[in-house]
Amino acid sequence: DTGGLWCEAPDTQIDVEEYCGYFRAVQQVFHVIIGLGKLLNVTMELGIDRRRLFVEGLQLLFRRLQLFVGALQFLIGGLQLLVRGF
Picture 1 (spheres, rainbow, N blue to C red):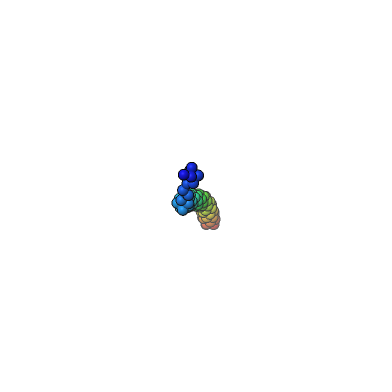
Picture 2 (picture 1 turned 90 degrees about the horizontal axis):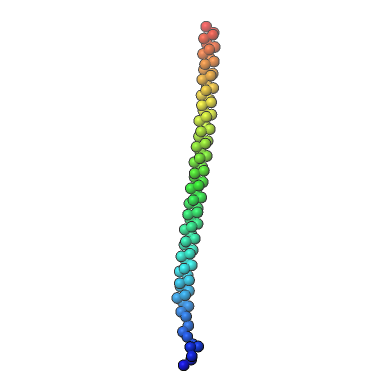
């Protein structure tokens, strides 16, 4: 009897495999989190770009209305000149 001094050596191969499996799982979770972060970033950028495009569209509409009003004023001025001329 060895008095319990000797015991079986732990199966290090199983421990390493379990550790590697755990590490791969943690690594996959991080990849998913990073992917979701990138998706959120792209979504935010698209939202910002969409708002910027809307504002620029409104500015273009305003400028076109100003041009239309100017053209009408020019037309009215020409008609007034034509009426006064006769």
